[in-house]
Image 1 (cartoon, one colour):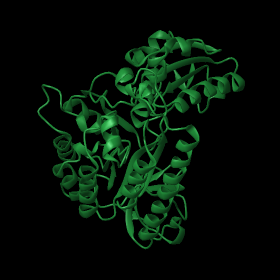
Image 2 (tube, rainbow, N blue to C red; image 1 turned 180 degrees about the horizontal axis):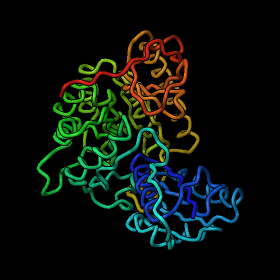
Image 3 (cartoon, helix red, strand yellow; image 1 turned 90 degrees about the vertical axis):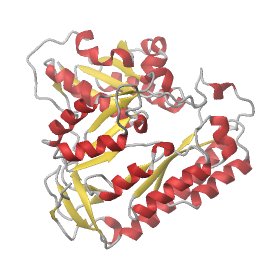
Length: 411
């Protein structure tokens, strides 16, 4: 049986998809390069917004159009939240929630000779070390579909990083709420402690953190990131809003001044770091003045990119029942304003990097690379993919003037 997995949404979902692909290969399935060549198409879904749900429905229709003979399995967060709705989509043969995702080889009845494992052909695999969330943000459905926070044991993570480090130069550590890793009883470590252990006990050349909530960006973690080139110079901290009033309605655990302190500390200790955030516009009751607070707050901080989301009502969340919804056209207008602001900041950051030497990992077919501070650059000539090189960024951030092996520190 040939299978194709399409992942939607966050890095945690991507990591789930990679693990599922390996499980199917061990069970005797062969990965296909696209849905047209697959007998089984698995849609590993997201449900964080109404738009994410729409993407799933469109994907089902597209699979049926491009490969009518394929059997379709819907899994992930959308399948967990509304299994009956997913099952009613024409052409869907199975619906499997998050809790049973790793039983999919058994569910579809796979039998055959084990194949070589594949992480979906990625040169930067995502390793999920945490799942679930104990926060109760009023807009978020994720705790309902992912469950409470739980951490992969440290010994298992060390083992996985060692294994992946033999094949890949960069590994992305991901989680639904990554900064909460190790908070359950029985693990007497925090995320920074885990990183120190990985640096000491594995040969991985670079670790990258996916997303860490601002209250978990402690000085110890930021200081460790700044101290070694083996951790990418990349901080992604969800913001959601720069207005304290909106943050309170969202039931977020910090205020704008706390967030700003963490971001400024990150920039102080890592002057060339990528600094990104998730921002939501159009939350119920968000006034023009509150939106302006957010815009000015973002303007004043050294962000290098933003993920801007338009608020979408999720049935079953407190926010969906709140009064004073922001009109859809106004939500879209505010989204556009912040996207334009983010684009300007990104251009300024890219221009500031011209002429600097940065460590990068070659990706895709070796024609491009991703720098330690999250800039995708085109290479002047192809290199082998999955290699760490040092690059000097030229005008337009497209030319590599220097291509030498990356030198690791001694830690």
